[in-house]
Image 1: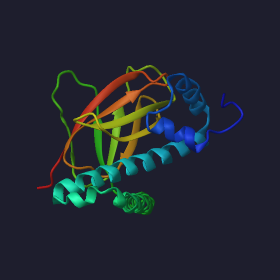
Image 2: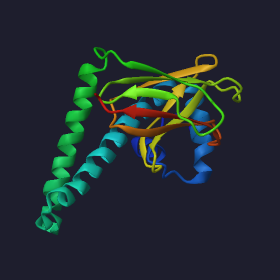
Image 3: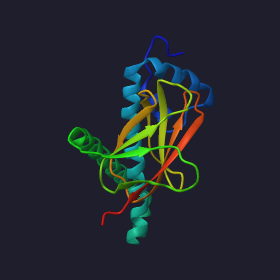
Image 4: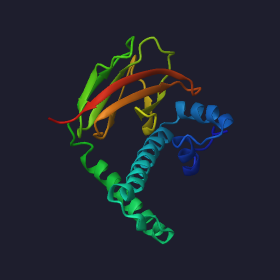
Length: 201
């Protein structure tokens, strides 16, 4: 299906948002295995979609925090949409500016038995999450998803494996419990890791 061409933006966005039809996922992921340009474009799309979700969540919460019911009027929807686009654009620009300058806090995630979460990270810092992929089915890449304790996705990307390891950076998150899920090329959930982002003291 994608043998002689790269994927278009709409297809990348559907995959990143989890809205791709089930039958289209397997050929899409097979193409990703051999196409580095599409892997890079998908990673950029994942950043954009994640930033848009965060901006949208903040805008939905603002009327509730301030107790301003007039913000719910439909005539303000275009203005709020414009604000969301501005927030996303600023976030993407800042991520490009400081990505190389950040000194990320490394967090090693390993599979453990039981419900205890041992991995800790400070709030507000770039994080370098390093995953132990030992004993997982061999693959040159894995789809990773980070969710909060309620299961809401906060980040997603396709990451190449480096032997039995994989690593990725995420911008500093709010305090709380998070889970990183590892999916194989067929879309099967292979493993889940937990870590806690702690408030700064």
